[in-house]
Length: 300
Image 1 (cartoon, rainbow, N blue to C red):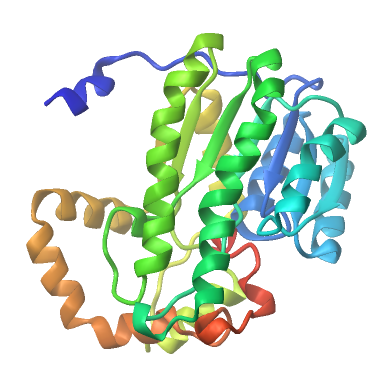
Image 2: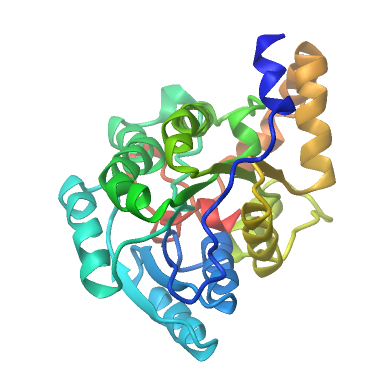
């Protein structure tokens, strides 16, 4: 029962991102939930450094943030590239100053059965979903310590529930969730917080394609800007964790209470789930990189 003791402790104080002088770095900021979080922060007067692979998409978000009265800069970068990751903190400091909030919302799916995945697809997923958040957090820790800052990790239901054709993606997401939990020990020294968000699927071309591939006529999808607002509100309230989507919460709870039952139910639907995970809009199977696979997580 020791693992439940954290539920009894009060929320840790967080950096006040509503202050106009606060600076946030958001990865995967070009679309979906990353974009929604960036806009939510901009509405509160936070200066935002927008990171992602697609410069055009980042510029669109930068314009929206600027129209809301916030300082904003687009910083195109491929976080799977070590040199790009190492250069990013310096680019942020030069453009805006020392950040008080780091948001990890970027990721790639690499959906498919493990035996069908090429080494390149696996390596890219691990580099983007796990190595990049850990390395970038380490690089920005001095800034967060100086500003008494915090971290938000956008996770996934697949970090907890083992879906078919998601062994690599689930492993990377489970890894970053574990890393975020352990990081709380380090940031507590300066009153920082690490919040993990488990968003529901949001409305994008990517998720619509997944629903079509799975043959789902009705598939409830949330608005990414609404989800971004809720994640930021939860962070400002000092929450350690935020979960959206009644269905996702119910499935996660069911898996904790009866993992074997949930596994059998998913196994019975493995063909449909596999089609969804291999939807052509985002598939990175066999080492082929899809353009829309970039920043996948904020597309949930």
